[in-house]
Length: 109
Image (tube, helix red, strand yellow):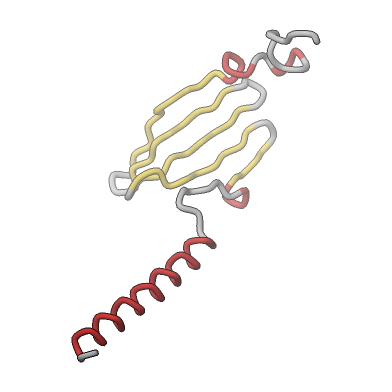
């Protein structure tokens, strides 16, 4: 075995070691952003949470449980702007919560 082959085997072995270390580190982290309950603030029937959605941009999510609405505001930190992006009526999606058990599309078994 000459020096070139020995160097190639050494580089290949170090690549495997670095790849294994990378996989071990990625197991402890999530690839997607997760909501952290410590970032949420609740006051009465209103819950607010911010999350980074893009580079230099965060979104503000406001859940109004009494009105059954989710408001999503996009904030642009560099421009100091706050714009309403979506106003979602959760009663239309999940059914009227005040009726008790949610959606009226239940079937009996």
